[in-house]
Length: 419
Image 1 (cartoon, rainbow, N blue to C red):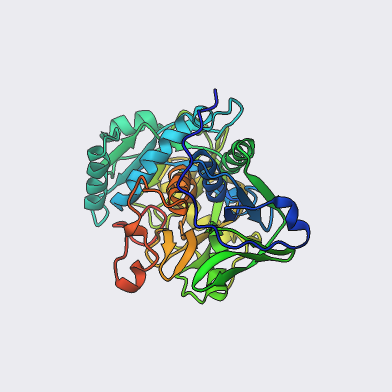
Image 2 (image 1 turned 60 degrees about the vertical axis):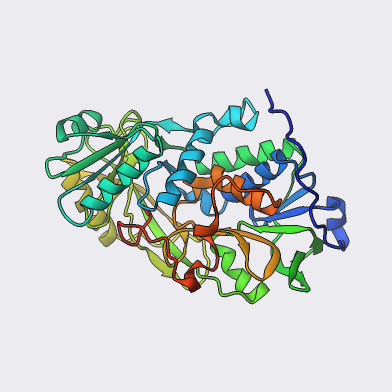
């Protein structure tokens, strides 16, 4: 059953509106969301559930068809940055009861609840892992410490004889980012949110130091608040608003390897802190393993979701790391490969909330590989910030200005997507 509508939020400080051309058919939006990936769609749905009456989402492409479409889809609450643990914990609650949370019996995130297993040998990753597992436990997250035999019972295709510490998170797994985005969009539409695909935003309308709308090829649309969920394209804010945006686009390679034995969906996602690339892997159906490295990727000169090259040298390099952990996988065959692009900040953690000196703009970018995992909770806090409501999680640690102030949220495992 759909949830009852909450009380309307406080009246927004509405900016003067100007409309031209075809956009006139979209009425008078109070909030414009730029970007219809999984974050933008989550923001839109949360805005509607929090009582926003007129929400318009604009995307240069299609719903869930940008960087979200290339996500590996892994869900976990394990982070070495404590602030991320709380966002991930809140997000998992949504994923676990997705249709119920969205009030739509047909909504699905494609969740496979198989658990998450992370291991480290003696060395520089050991204490960070111990501290991260303790931080999860302190927040009420179920985490089990396993010995090598117990770990092999859960993931029998792997070896753990070199592991000094193994953590297992049963409330974890993987899901489908595109399906999640489109489900959020469907639920948002049912609450009156309007989506316009194929409309690129070309600039922000700024008056008196306040964002009062956006410019598009089809005309200007004014609104009280603009939420930027532009992912790798958030760097456009530098040109539009004269900001210094701490962001680069980084391409990462993902492989699907066909091994000698099944990697079943009952087997947990695996993170190998002992491998050179801090490998992560999960079932990809049948005998296939989806696998990639959790380290820095290829920095791109400009945002680009075009499929990049996956060299055979890289396949061999990752394959060797897989074979070292999974006996018999030295003969694994390459079934498929693709590339995805991360929006990466200097500390590999997102920027969330208002932008100093530019009222009327709320941003969410720089997820550095975390976006899908955190999307339900992030969508809610960005919606709360846009509506002037208290946020469930303090946004100060994720502030835009933290880089200039030297308050980085750097993870203990080094640069990479397991912050």
